[in-house]
Length: 188
Ligand code: 5GP
Image 1 (tube, rainbow, N blue to C red):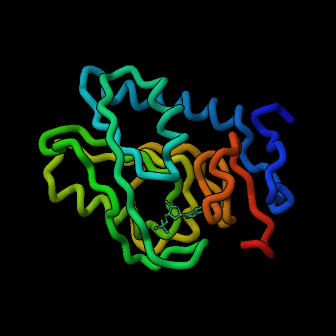
Image 2 (image 1 turned 90 degrees about the vertical axis):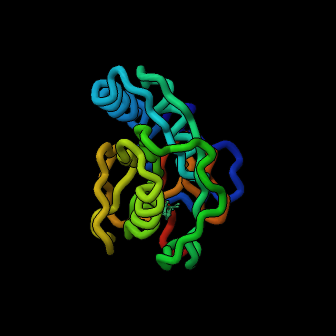
């Protein structure tokens, strides 16, 4: 196990069942996705819209490999529900600061699960008339989809398991892990 995959002294470390995506696997795939985005947006400016908090680490790693000019912005959404599933009722907690009308917006999200959060966010952003609106998502759990959401750039499709690490949390724990892990089921 590489250093980036080791959690030192995390109080809830025994709740992590296994490592699903080690750090090196994540980084290799992120580089590939960034190359694809760079090719598609060559010569254009991208408004990179990071969905807080989960996509923060992914956005940081992705953008270092992007060649086009990138303007970074953040949006924070909250969805009501339990700790591990969403209700579909979404609220924008921190809005975009950039004017996005007429600009190429790329939303960077951590994971699409039911799709409800992204569906709501995209509908909201579309009303502001961006020149284009695309989605880059690190993880997708297609089995859980309740509304259709088109993901233009995807890191990994995964099974229906509750994952943590690399920005993704359980009750604000585990965001600082360099890998994606699966939680013990009795804990979720
Ligand atoms: P959706 O609206 O697509 O059901 O849920 C999207 C949000 O739910 C994600 O942005 C993420 O915050 C949270 N979420 C969904 N699945 C997981 C998961 O397996 N682990 C974690 N930590 N969060 C998840």
